[in-house]
Length: 62
Image (cartoon, rainbow, N blue to C red; front, side):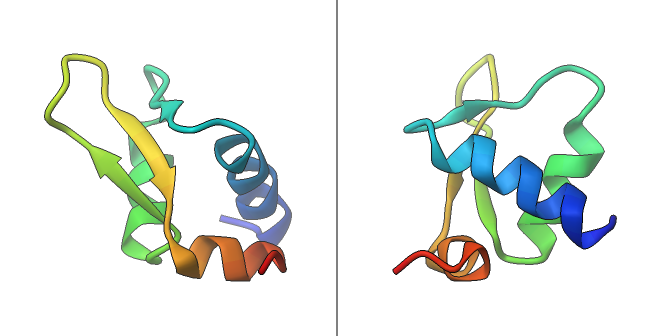
């Protein structure tokens, strides 16, 4: 995944308390999770993603 794609997705997730993992994008979200930028909540029927401190730092936010 390109840096621009990562930043774009992280910005969307960061703007929401938790971002629904959209159908067809599971692999993309899982890649962000492997990078440590988000945490996916798999306990609900509709998975959601939340930013981690590493993801916030990657975006340049404190």
